[in-house]
Length: 108
Image (cartoon, rainbow, N blue to C red; front, top):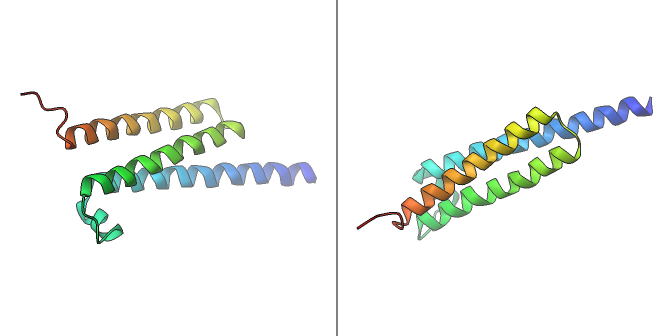
């Protein structure tokens, strides 16, 4: 009986971590593409670029921690790799987007 409850607890942790993972991905994508969303979150924001940086990189960095927790509770290897690579792709996209947004990538 105790083993069944323990398995159910581990499965519940997996579900909660995956829900949190996808919520943070969706939140960061919306923050990256929507100026209105940034103004809604921070009405007194002076620099949209700085606010966007905060609302995209912080959730993605938290997601790396969540992926590590998923690995620790032994999810399927395919789920782990998909989650890790998806998070890595978004992380690299946000670096590229911020680099372009700052004007550092312009060639004269």
